Length: 246
Image (tube, rainbow, N blue to C red; front, side, top):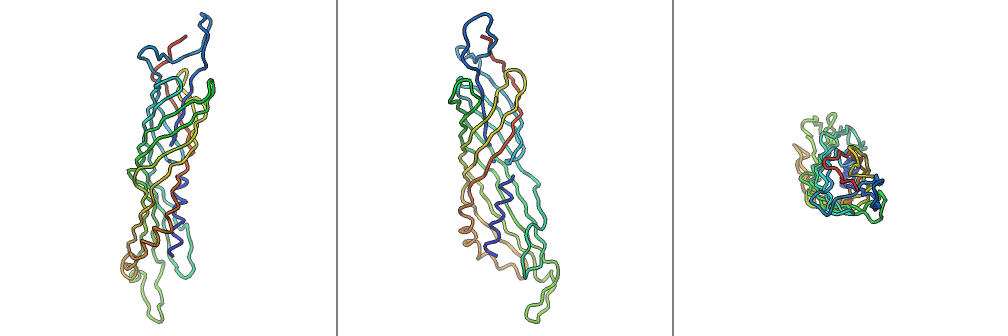
């Protein structure tokens, strides 16, 4: 039973963030030019807000253009109410089980545009996981016969295993497409991963299953390598500060 809770990470893996920015290529100083550039000489900088959806849940962010190839972003993502019933079946232990996951992610990220006129970006930064929990609960379906001793399911009790990745997590990834709209709206994509803290387990039970806290050290060891949280995210961006026309 100490090995099976490793599968909890699969739930967290389908439900963490990145970001992207695009700047227009250099324009010629002609009256006919229709390109847009960032006004870095003045006090104007491109800004946008975005709504995001992906493996890190639902969220929102604010993006600020620092330089033509560099932007900063602050945001929040959350996953709530994720639950999967009877995800596992164990021989010799006739019980219902329930997988759950909850995540709250506050992040600060930077985006760098390495090539002129391209919509490919390198994204990096850090997040604080206010909450990053994955758990599994076991509920016996019926009574058990222990060497002739008949016990009801209430006498057997329930078992609750929780894993927490709470804490600081660095992020590295790439961004595709324009993240600060030239007009009003744009869509872009983030692909990357967070590197999480080693998870900390908590095991609680009732009645006959109450004496299982001793498995926590072994469970922590079994789960110690499950620290990458993949990010695949679609961002819906809205311009709140227009570019200055060339």
